[in-house]
Image (cartoon, rainbow, N blue to C red; front, side, top):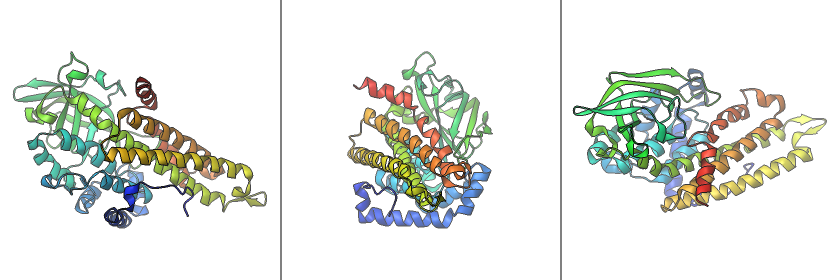
Amino acid sequence: MPAINVPQPEFMDDEEIAIFADAVGKFYQQHAPEKRVLKWREDGQVEREFWNEAGEAGLLGVSVPEEYGGHGGDFRHDMVVIDQQAKHGVEGFAASLHNTVILPYLVRHGTEEQKKKYLPKLVTGELVSAIAMTEPGVGSDLQSITTTALKDGNGYRINGAKTYISNGQTADFIIVVAKTDPNERAKGISLMLLETEGAEGFQRGKKLDKVGMDAADTSELFFDDVFVPAENVLGGEEGKGFYQLMGELPQERLIIAMGAMTGIEKALEVTMEFVKNRKAFGQTIWDFQNTQFVLADLNARGTAARVFVNDCIAKHLKGELDVPTACMAKYMVTELQGEVVDKCLQFHGGAGFINDYPIARMYRDSRITRIFGGSNEVMKMVIARSM
């Protein structure tokens, strides 16, 4: 029995979803064994070939419509890919970014030509994606970006720098957030579609040395007069980028909350196993009342968080998840994750500070969840404005 026995989303009881989950789990077991994931961790990125394997197995673009080369699934199938990845410890593979953040921009906002050109390649893994938002001097305040995409003949020239870009070393298809009108804030932002192969003036900077998430490459990107044709403005119209970004953020923040929830459950599971086997002063760590009380408290609050996340998932599947509620989920669950992982590490004693133990990696990896997708301070600002 798991350490935290909580209700899973209702859709997981669907037979078709269960069959899909089993197939995805077997793919991860066969193609991402612990030895291979360890190599990714040492290299600081997932090998490019794995993306092709995932595409061939049907793990990419699972909710992309079939007419664009996708598998015709929905958000439930996307969640299965992410959930099974977490359960099998497949670190670094940015399936959630590719499937649930970037591809929806094309599906929901792309022109017919853009969908036909890019989606089939993104589904097979021929193209791996990234989105370049954050800049060296600009974090959550996207309206203040300085990267520009200015008209030049039959296209645009992109100039600027981006940083903290997930998949930055691997991606060969990048959505670049840029100002097509530097005199405007939100209304001046457009999303530019860039294929990196042969793109003169595009340069990848160093692979950043992070506190955690060792197997996930995060990079600097530089644009020096990089040309993109006019038809590469997402949606075919300038000035829509900020609104396209805002429209996709509830799903992105829900995904972060879901990942944090899985992290909470895994931390409690490995800690329960540890404290029931580790002995001190003639008894197991579990036998101490303090251990039982602390873990009971974390279990109770983790269960409440899971119920809230499940409700958010149900709302999102019906198209009813609003921005403030998504922010609440992202804020509350990631804060709880930080507390849970910290207290669980404490129960491991000195072992908790050794990277060979899963709890140590969870401690490092979980810290970023309170920052990316919009910092938790920004989440509270959005929630407050809705009150």
